[in-house]
Length: 389
Image (cartoon, rainbow, N blue to C red; front, side, top):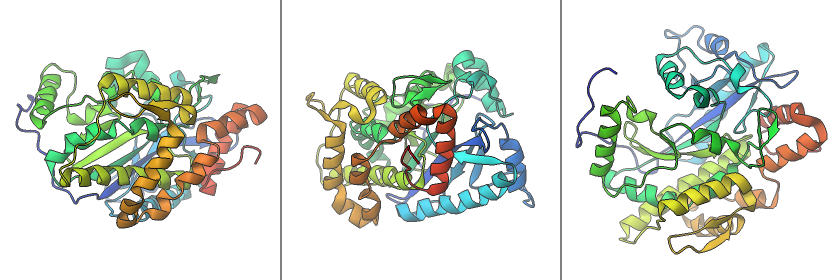
């Protein structure tokens, strides 16, 4: 490990515009004929970077495995602008993938590709990760949607994070899209959630009372060699000090743009909601870690059929009921943020089949190859498709 860890008091949080928005969307590379994972990220990057001075693309990135590319939006103020930005990048990416017989898919995991057969991207950071985590690291054939929301005052970051963990399992349920793993029906709505938390610095975030406590934690983790940089803390919700944002990472990769819009809008509104509560001097909701961890598991197991713990009092409610109430409560904020239409997609999604439920029905009709091709079809369509289609 190079250098020495920064001592407590030196974890700076960048200035950013309040409730600015950015999205990272990890996509699977799928064989157009049979739906298997394609290991062609390097070839794709060569094509999309052709003619550029540097062999990097500002909005299309490599990831841990060569069967993955990540689309990254610019910084925007509305959900529509951020998602439209990604759609433009997606169209650019397709010009390369179509020529190669590659489809693109969302979902939290590939339904049948063998994790042990996937190739790791050549990068020192990824090599160190696999060397340290070995078998579990090799299982990280997973795909997520990450939403960044700008926070204008560092003092707000940790209180908002503590409030978000009372609702992050609801987001996870809404986006759950990985019921299969290595050709197995796992019985979980999102097996990605269970796999990802096996990394030593991933999963449910710690809840810190002060920024100094967070700095002390980062200092300890760095000086003991657990992490080399803050970015190696892969919590479901984390601060992003370099960007001045809170990053919500709990959701499986959206299988289509419509559901992406809904999940991003709900996240955007929640952060602004808690920010306004702080401005008004109100106490934010919170829950003990044991409730938070239980909610994550229930959500991963049961998806939209989960009954989750709402707050520190232990009150419980069906996830769909809580989500419906959240939409109503957040509508005025959505109107202010310009995402009322996107938030308004959620009631229809609650009445329809969730992503993992659609995959289960497709598997019954067409097997796991059908699931992979259905993921590709939804990505092309831009909206959920009925399993019988």
